[in-house]
Length: 336
Ligand SMILES: *Cc1c(COP(=O)(O)O)cnc(C)c1O
Image 1: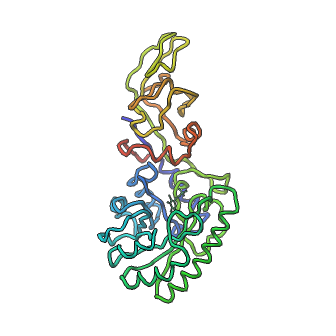
Image 2 (image 1 turned 135 degrees about the horizontal axis):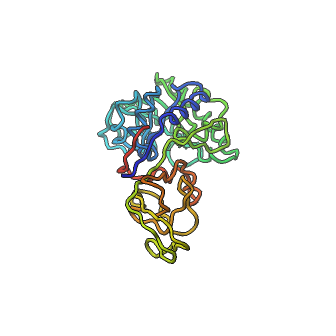
Image 3 (image 1 turned 90 degrees about the horizontal axis):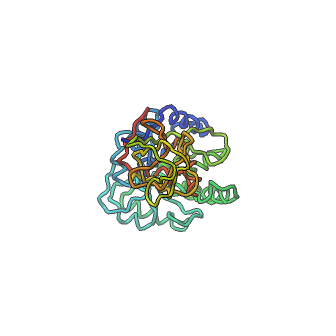
């Protein structure tokens, strides 16, 4: 059966790099949403907690429940309030109306819109937010913003930092008025690479923990995941014969060809048999990928499909996040 190997040493190395840059592991929030970017939420939660990380961040309440035992704090980014929240977790306020629906007793972090205009409160909503929260017995314990272009070399990142600094001053004053202790955070992985000063803030480390830097930066990270496929069958493809759907690859001479057990049904982006897509061993995928398998030159019982998602991201014109996160939760994840 195909398998995802999670390289423990590489993961701990990446957290060490991030922690050295930020100044403390206590300031790192690990983002474990979407099955930890396809790496396996439980496996990564276990490693992060072993490293000493106490704060994680996920997408939904069920994701938080899955990893609850590993962290002191778990922030949920995209919960749609129901009034039936699990009070162990911290909920993001993406819209001021959230404060009227969340269960009394909830802890929240305010999302602050500083330019991205996707989610969060505007500066003019802050005062009402603190008042509603206080009336409804909802505890505001932090506030954060998200950068829309921290991964692009432009001044926008600095504009947003300025905007957040202004919002923070206002939030701190309101926090003092209501007697609240607040945690702030803004930088994601690209921001961690760019920032030279983290002020009093925590950081949200997503793709960086998995070994992908976005700049040629001070962090030297190592990809954590490698994806492996196992042999289903092999045969000699004779000169002139073609393999797979639509006969996209035809042998020029006799070759030992083999089929391995991963396909687009496992969440791999679908290779259509056009262009050169290489496996980690340098061999090409041959012919169209099937739902549950692909063909390539025979190279033993097991081949590494990739140990660096950027190879596939570049081929398909997308980002490494997209290649990683689509990998089916059904594939076995093993820490090595
Ligand atoms: C996904 C996400 C992150 C992590 O982003 P990376 O670029 O992977 O570090 C941080 N903050 C928010 C709000 C997110 O949605």
